[in-house]
Image (cartoon, rainbow over all chains, first blue to last red; front, side, top):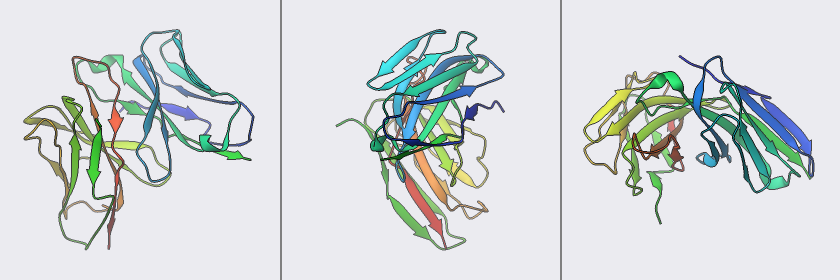
Length: 114
Length: 114
């Protein structure tokens, strides 16, 4: 099946630093979604992107839908300890037609040192 | 409050027993999904349902069964045929074909088979 390559797998940063992570695919996607998962909890939707080139912010988080429609980026500015968690990208492939299934990346584990 | 509930949060079962995980949503969503998450891994789709009384196999359906008799409920049964059932199980829902691809997750059920 289709796969999303999410990188980096993990990040260790100091509080106050900016963070950047990305997802890439070999095929075109119609939708890109970014989720955050805290330990032992379900993922929470952070940002949804629906148009190529779209840049959307949610507080200190900014995500972009790549122009090629094959990638997406998530940036976190001025990180704080509560940013700790696993960030997942997900996308809806253009080849999937009427199916609502998403393809998920394997996640980026973020650790923030106070 | 609108949302997705999963119960119980923790579940212990003996090997060879079937177990049913509950998922309920009051978001009036048409589509519902079941994912499995193993430590350090992404989300793998078990089953999904785009409308009441209909469901499709995901990527790892073997050893699992579902039903969708009501719009708000999508229970998952982990059968004794599932060779490695210990995992974190996540239920999600989305508006369906009439809306976007955003999926919203429940808090998860951690199943441990002894």
